[in-house]
Amino acid sequence: MEENRIKYDKATGIYTVVSDKEDFRILQLTDIHLGGTIITAGHDRKAILACEKLIRYSRPDLVVVTGDLTYPMKGLKYSYDNERLVKRFSRFMTKTGVPWAFTYGNHDTEIGAKLGPEELDRLMMRISRKNGFGKDGKGLLYPQKGPEIYGRMNQLIEIRNSSGSLRQAVFLLDSNAYLSAEDASCCNAKRRTGLNIMKGREYDYIHDDQVNWYREEVLRLEREEKKQVSSLIFTHIPLQQYKTAFDLYREGSSEVTYFFGFNEEKKVGKICCSSVPSRLFDTARELGSTKGIFCGHDHYNNMSLEYEGIRLTYGMSIDYNVMHMIAWKKRQRGGTLVRCSVDGGMEIEQLPLMSV
Image 1 (cartoon, rainbow, N blue to C red):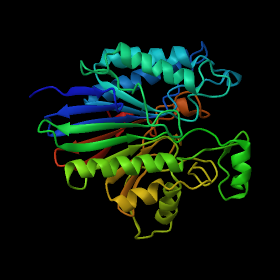
Image 2 (image 1 turned 30 degrees about the horizontal axis):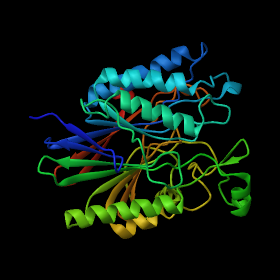
Image 3 (image 1 turned 60 degrees about the vertical axis):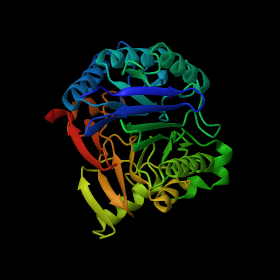
Image 4 (image 1 turned 90 degrees about the vertical axis):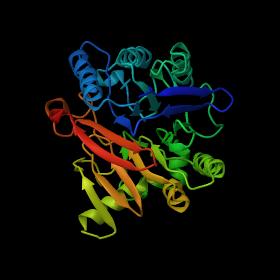
């Protein structure tokens, strides 16, 4: 069988992965949280080894890292040097021979980190150029230009069959990091249920212009394909609908369908979403294209529920560094495998690290 081929369109910033495989595999890894100091060295090695083990077991065609690859917070005994940590992970991924994509988490460009949003964006571009834009079937698939909308980078990757037909449109949407004080005050966010505030900072959300871009791209693809297309969304911070679906699940409602996993986050409301609503879920439901939305962020949550026709799935986290005592806990750690069939079908499998 012919190997996957990767094309990059410099004009649009869109990567296209062409595959003859019946079963195209996307492995979601999230919240790897590399620390980068002597104190975290042992845990950093375990995190990389965990990623290696999951990749070797699942044999993915594409790895998607849904944010918080690094944890540049020196005040908590971690390093500000997110540049060195990103380069380290990139070298590791190149050795695996598997192409990978990345969407930002709230920690990747923390205040005080060596590289801020613009600098880290430029580093990612340099890495993808050095890798030849994935033309040899490996390396970082990061665009040299993105849509001029809110966020550090928003991206579309097209998975196509050898016939040219679209198998799956993969959207990587930046859920951003923290609201400005002005935005939080304007939205009255701190008075809503489920404060979701980290050290006085309110989590951001996927903004209207990002949602509009997603909508326009889905409609463009449908015009080109002359039919409804299948798409997936990867992001970091969960949408509010994750909380809605989980609350319905706890109530025993028939409005949600449970597939697997557990939510054991101990923060307020268990679902750490922004208290500012995003239009993304409603838009996805109206379009009818997106079969699944995948996020990270809450390290002890990995439940997958279907709500209003869309699978809402938490990826299993990798984290050995951040949450108190999490290095010694096992059952929440792992990856999430998404199988995409030729006709656009999707199957999701949870891969606990202790089982692979």
